Length: 118
Image 1 (spheres, helix red, strand yellow):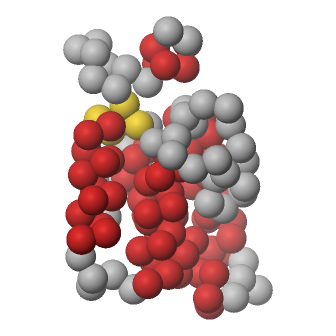
Image 2: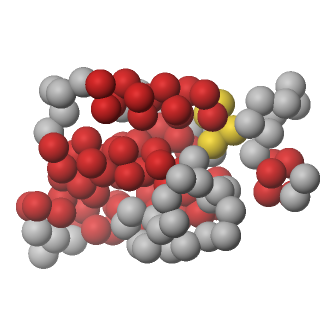
């Protein structure tokens, strides 16, 4: 087991994604894909964030970072920060803003900055 895998596991042995149990993140992704009330670009951003956080996507949704393993809390937080910068930029097109908001909100929950699961 690598150091990052060890850090991504609770004392009880349950694997974590950020600060959330992996099963909770997986359920959040399944719930998202089963419902249709979220705006399309927002939902795509949430799904991209969850997949990347679980190590199912090669590149981060905002920065394009490509870690070798499942991203740790440091990388997840950096992606939240990058989303904030993009959302604060008035030149960010509206078509990108919804996607980025979805990434931000999903990763904020994964990192423990928000209690609201998307």
